[in-house]
Length: 227
Length: 219
Image (cartoon, rainbow over all chains, first blue to last red; front, side, top):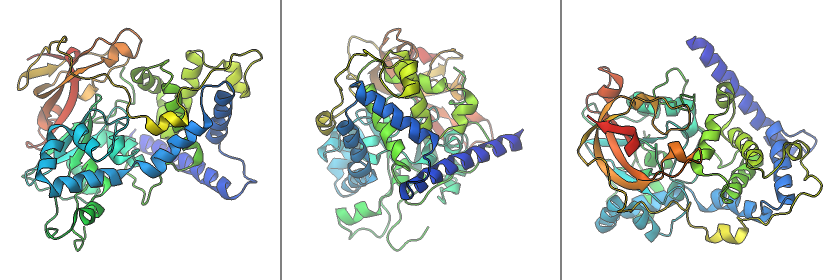
């Protein structure tokens, strides 16, 4: 049964990949027929525009917002500020939405947020086992792996295995705290500041902070360090 | 509802496939359905809980086979019909039926530019008293509702400790079915990994879930 399910998932993934490839081909070759969802979305959009329910310029603005304005660089700036400014860090851990708004980041999926801090004795990991809840204002939209059955199923039962799969070493003596986003609270991990970064500026520090570290599947490494 | 969406603790779902330099949207239609979804949600015909439940109602094999945004496409088509925005005929033909009324879009480009939040009401509401206290030991109810719930199967019947009171939130189990907001306190509840998964789990690890009053009982 196990192997059947895996075969099924693999073939499902292959079909999805085929659809993506197909649609990508279409971008370069106008002779190709777009994949089924592409056609259906196009038909739905034109119907909804004709009926006056959606504004095409509004759709453009939303896509632009998530492709160009909102993303993990926002979260990286929050983390770097917390590393260099103890007062900011205190505010961030006490009232994340207000502290994040100080840097100008406010929007849906982030009004109610908690920042959880990694340290020598605690490593935090964020998941949404029921769907795909994710802190949009600071990380943008989630990557495919975060929404995948593989991650959602394993993060709660085998967090250390997941961390190993991401190449992250967490010692036996460290507590792993998993945060399953089952309500309207959204979680951001404040990673540990890596050693050897004392002389870096806030901007240089922000450049080290990755999306994956703010989900908690990896750690932030100093510039010379290779994982 | 005990559906395939409730994935916590399932095994053998394969490796976690990461993609280098992953784009926000892999193909243009993903961005379009993302934005259509937000525009229709802004009309207020259905709430976030009803939306999540509609995804959970996808047949299990379809749910697993579909990509993330294919699910979004399907539920937007379904919700638009269910709530009378479009007729099944219009969906099939892609054109408005003769004599159909013309609406005015709610989510315009100007609103996107200054839109700040999802409009979740404040979680401060002194009129709604908490049923539990921080540091209290609680048990997640053993329940198997056939409708929407945000209490995952893996935590049901398990003992945990309340570590934080998040304030007052709308109750998804009723709101998803338009049976009222039934606002109540939500807590962060810590479950030890061993209580959830048995002796093979690390004694140091824990899982925190956010839980409404109605998901908990005194332990």
